[in-house]
Length: 113
View 1 (cartoon, rainbow, N blue to C red):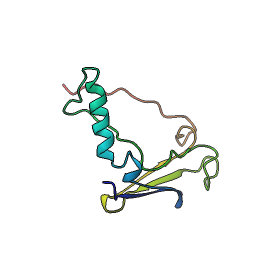
View 2 (view 1 turned 135 degrees about the vertical axis):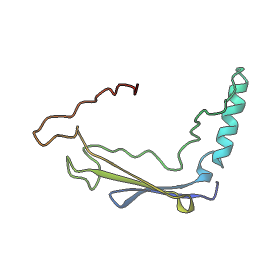
View 3 (view 1 turned 90 degrees about the vertical axis):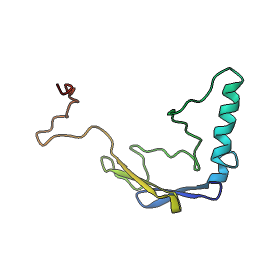
View 4 (view 1 turned 60 degrees about the vertical axis):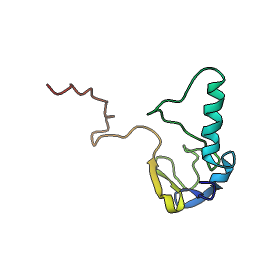
């Protein structure tokens, strides 16, 4: 993982770059450090827990002043991890509006019987 290169793009523009080496030399090293530190307090990582090892790039702000996105326009952020794959998400300021201008509400689903 140290050799994995990452590019972070906002609306197609590269805003940050990094490598796995930027995460304590190797993302696995960050997880090992965490496991050892928790052990000092009698706590262990358990099967099924999600552990985030750190970021290969700096944080990027997404909001009304997102570069290359007009207010209300979706900001697309892409993380390109080279041979590991690409992830793209889109965000827009404010809630989505229905055709009549109303904001959709979250509906609680009843469990199937």
